[in-house]
Image (cartoon, rainbow, N blue to C red):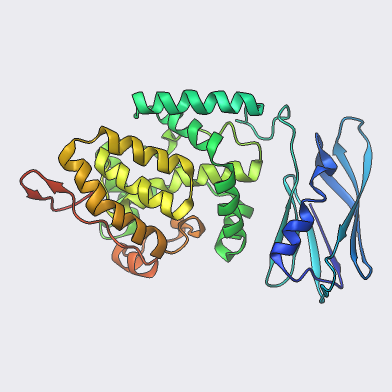
Length: 344
C-alpha cells in the first residue's frame, strides 16, 4: 500500500467521487501489489497523481500510472491530502473525510480465494435461477446467498461508503474480522442477559453455527465481498437484538427491516417470498404489524453494519438495544394469544 502527503485537499466527497469516474479504467486487468513511488501535484484546475508501481499486469515489470483529475470551475482547494492505494481502491483522505475511487475489474480475474468470475450474462442467468430456486426451496441458503450477490452490488457500495464515513466502519474494512464458531465460543460461558449469552442461546437452541454461512463467490470486488460476508455473519446478531425468531414470519419481518436499513434487493425479495408462504392470518399480521415496525426500526437504529458486535459480547443486551436505538419487534401472535418471546 502507499501513503504520501501533499498540501492540498479535495473539499467535497460528491466531487471526489465524480472525479473518480474519470480514472477507474486505468488498471483494467491489473492489480497493484507494490507501490514504490507516488507524486502528487496541483495546478489551478487539475489534480495530478503519478504512481510508479510493480504489479501483476499482463506485460509484467514496473508500471507508471498517471491520474489527471479535473476540478470543476470555482472549486477551491484546502490543505492536507493523503492518498492510499489498495488492491481494490484509491482513497484520498483528510483528517475528517475519506474519498473513494474504485478500480474497475475484468470478469476473468479471480479477486479472492472463493471468487467465481462471471460475465454479466452469467450473472443474469444466476439471478433468475437463484430467484426461482429460492422461492421453491427457501431453506436453500446457497441460492439466497447467490441472489444477494448478483443483485446487491449497488447496495453493497452504499453500505461500504457508509462504513468509510464511520470510524468503526473503517476499522472493520481495514481489519476485516470474521465471526466464526471458534471466536464466538466464549459466548457460551456468558450470562443470558448479555449480548454474547443471548447470541449463544439463539444459536445453540437452533443448532446453528457461525461457520454455516456460505462463502461469497459472485461479487467482483474484494472489499464489497467482505461487506457481503460481514452482512451474513451479523444477521444472527440482528435476530437477537430485534428479538425475532426464525419462523417464516420472523424471518420475513427481519428481512423487511433489513431491506429498509440496507437497501439490499435480496432482502426485499425474501420478504415477498415469506409473505407468499404465509397463511391468511399470518400474512395479515405481517402486513399490518410487522411491515410498519420494519420501516420504523430500520430507519431509527444505528448503522448496523458499522458495529463491531464482537467487542460488546459481555455487555447487557438491553443497554445495547437502547444505545443502538433498537426498536424490538412486537411479540409474535400465536393462535392462542401472544408468545412470551419472539426468540422462542
